[in-house]
Picture 1: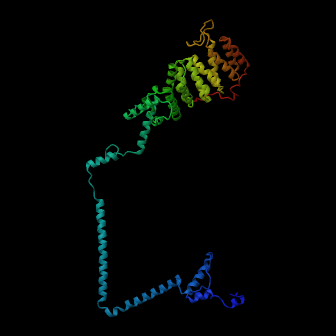
Picture 2: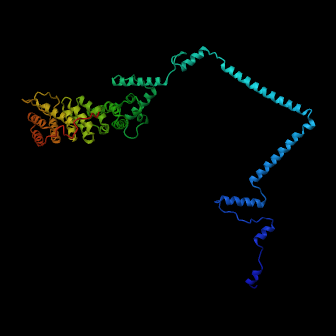
Picture 3: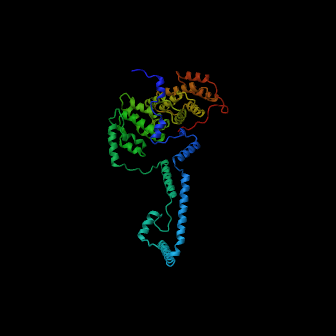
Length: 470
């Protein structure tokens, strides 16, 4: 088979052009191409109009005009027909039309009368008086009037609110006067449930506390419910967990009640019941946790412990908690002032010494109280406590003071020797001379003589007024 040359293919096309195929099949070939983008609206509208004209279609405006002309022609034909009718049926046609008009008018009048009559009936119904039964009136007055009378004033919401506020003020006043409101009797189910919780806490060692016990701090009468659980039978582990729960969830005044009623009692019984008079480890941890609310600890534990004439061992164990836990200076200043104003006892002096050795920047008011406290012992006839740490060997200067007092005096001289005035220094030196201790007295004198006088009150940078932290 031979090759086909280019000259042979040029003169003979293989098929007809595409536009001839389309025209022979009856289709219409568009002379102008459509616009690919709709950016120019004017061009596209003109092109569409031209296409519609070429294809024989009418646009909307032209069709609207044609319809309007057709409508006008029909109306003209109808008018001509109506004008020609009287010539053929003038004798009876108008009467029928008049009758029709009379019937329409009569129908309209009937409708108006019906509407008017309905309106009158409604007005008469609204104006009709309704007789109310006396029992219904009393029932209405019971719920919507003030005191059951028809002519009396209704209850006002503001009056209710003011009444509630007055009741609350009376309750607060009774609580402040020490006359609490009447207690609420606990339901039997609550008593049974918390008695079971008390049995659980009496054998508790570790793990999660019962959920009913965890909601106790959120109850208003938590003290009554707590009494049902019998805190005296709790294990030391349960006391520690309960202290964490109540101290962290209650306010300081409420946490103070828990510390005084539960923790203080368990502290003393734990020392008394132990063979070596030592405190249980978990009770000791509970004391440390209670110090996270310093005001509650001091008012609920330390001051009641001192007022109950505790011994030196109890005071030493409790004071060791103060050594290990940081306490704000204002709380320490207030409780130190309270201790200085109480009668002398070795247990009280233990707490005084520990608070001095914490090396606070105490206000001048507290420092003056400390100076007056040590100056009180210059007089040989100063009454002393029966609980003494040293042997009471009476001489012309009276009974000797316990060693803990001299140690507290030495701690004060070492820490605050530059915060006292010259007059106070002279009085303290005289106290050392009269209440001399052969081992500690020379140290106190050396510290006092090495100190410098503090600035006057006019130029003193330190605050002289102590804020009551409680």
